[in-house]
Length: 215
Image 1 (cartoon, rainbow, N blue to C red):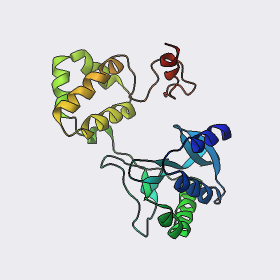
Image 2: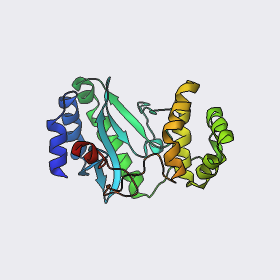
Image 3: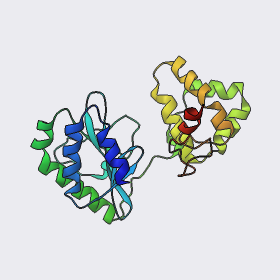
Image 4: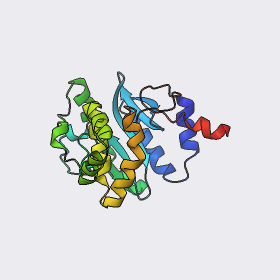
């Protein structure tokens, strides 16, 4: 894991100073550093606490159960309207991180307490998510697709509904549905491995890229 984390930071072309600073702050709270989802991830007793990553316009600390934090300073960001659990602290430069260092530590310690207490986010049931009209039309065209979709686990159904609904344009939704139709028919979730190479089955860990590299 340490080799993967070192490679991550070495390969950074953007946000290197900021993410390094965030890394040092996070580690000071006593969490364990590991590597998951291609990013440094910080855990305690094997429970995920926070993840750090960079985006185009900002870098961030992502709290896995951020929705349970009190957020007294009202600085946590909900990544998308449909994100139920995760929340982010976003930064655009080192100065912002330095200014909020004490607050960052407080939030991480609170996140640790949330895990230690065994608190869980109460997720909305699948029935509470609206099925996009585009998907309903696809079901009418293919009852096999409809049957396969509703045979998926509730979590897999929700992931697809969220992903399809995030696209505002009907054409984009239709394109996404078409792209994942084969997966659904095969009983696979949006993040499931379909090549059989993943070491984190049933989740995909990116091992399929080996197939491309060999060609």
